[in-house]
Length: 362
Image (cartoon, rainbow, N blue to C red; front, side, top):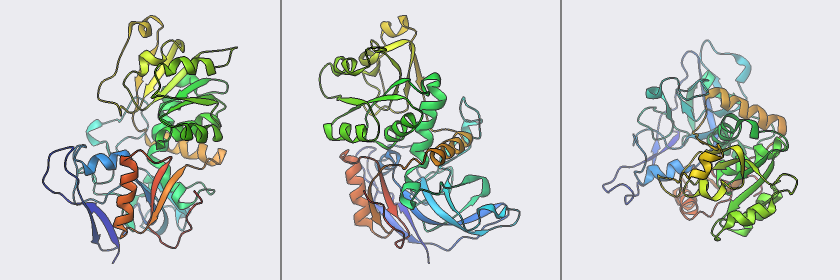
């Protein structure tokens, strides 16, 4: 029988508990009208999954399969489906309940991310999955299964932050700062911004990650652990236009006070995460410069499809940090979580569900 992977409930306080992984044998599902049966080749981890295992995420399901990112092949189609995807590799939409409204989910009560979610009995840590036809998108042909699995959640999050939220900064010649390079969303934002012709700078905790970002097209970067790193960053900006159009940020904290002097009047800070804590600063200089602070989350189904098309057009390859093989390789999967806990990864952490697929060269 096929396998699925779930998290097992144990006693403990939020932030102190560590839910173990549980391997399950499950029946192979059958697609109904308008549905597709997909044989999954690869799934990827996100920080959300780390939070789930520590009970730091709401509405956790201990029966629904784990993980939200998936790449697989359509092996069976139910009645009333188009034959266009049959036998083709696809990417799975990592969320439900948000169609196209640029402001946010049409009905927030129905919105949710898949994977160990009480709202949706669906996740990508399983060998077979059934989804509605419009919840699968033809995968860009140049992507390997691991690269495909690395894309969905971070891709749509980065796309919304950069394209939808920063607006005019997503253009050729714009100056953009991306904080915390090495994480999946930050790396996808870097690849998208470079693909659009932006001038990109980054912050990181290590010189190695900055060097790797420069190898991907960034103009340079600074260590955020250094005092007054913003002054060093200012010295890296071009003399002919030494201002930032936008900051794409996943950290929060002091990002406003650190970057306000570098932002142009009317510049924008897009915050898609707050890894430094649930609060951030707001200073009067930002108000006087008409700086905009915008919150951003994952994107809509429409934004997801736009993002995938851009990846196809620009032949972008998501960065994969590490791969392990097999849903039953619990020791290897635990190693991926250890890397995430320690911030060791540069890119995505991937499980190859299909042991026969080729692993990308890392």
